[in-house]
Figure 1 (cartoon, rainbow over the protein chains, first blue to last red):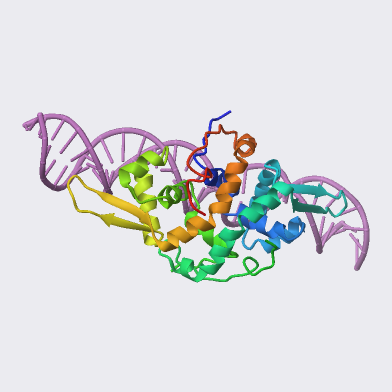
Figure 2 (figure 1 turned 90 degrees about the horizontal axis):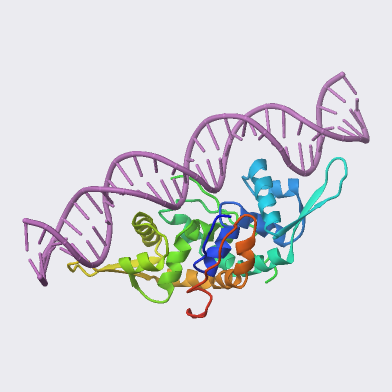
Length: 127
Length: 127
DNA sequence: TCCAGTACTTACGTTATGGTAAGTATTAAC
DNA sequence: GTTAATACTTACCATAACGTAAGTACTGGA
């Protein structure tokens, strides 16, 4: 067992939802359960490999639940656990902040991005 | 100019404070301005290179302010801008969530960590 | 027999991020 | 003239994270 140390709660949180994809997956699961292919469409730009990899990690971490309907063609549904839902709620203000300042953020030197908002921060999710 | 797209506010926020160090730096600046060497002590484990690199990026992004007192030996103070403070506040719930579940998080398979909390989530910072 | 649809899996390569260790500049104090 | 203190800077290396492209398994329907 490697030893890791969190110097604060932020550190611990980001250890779980850090990286390029997890927060987006979390967000797209916050509204309702989703199938794998559905998530693949919703999370723009993610590869199948990344999607399944992150979903597995999140399942291991107890923030998403995987339900296999054992049908053919396969049908699998992913949803948030209560732990995951709790996390999603904790992220809400950060999401709102990001939405509020998206234009500004996009123009930042470390970003040089083009804005195209959708799905988050537009009150689709309950607080 | 490269083109980047944020699919939600979370995406945008994490583009700014993602990575291993920025959130910790942000947090240590939230209470009061800090000198470089002070931050180096406060942010456990960070190298000088990383510290200065992240501080520069954060300065460019307008979330920290750098004040050089032009003394010898050098004296430089870093503090949060209002933008940075705003961000810190938006991160508060996430920080609290992390603190609350730190034990559990530390035991997660993707982490295998040893807990050693301090400084964040223990009400040193105003909400 | 071949294709479609779904949920993966695998192999391989690239890029981003972080780490180590040493060096620079300035001036005062010893 | 050497050391100490502070705030960096530089070169180089290691690893983790991410990306691409192709393949697998299963069965129903054309």
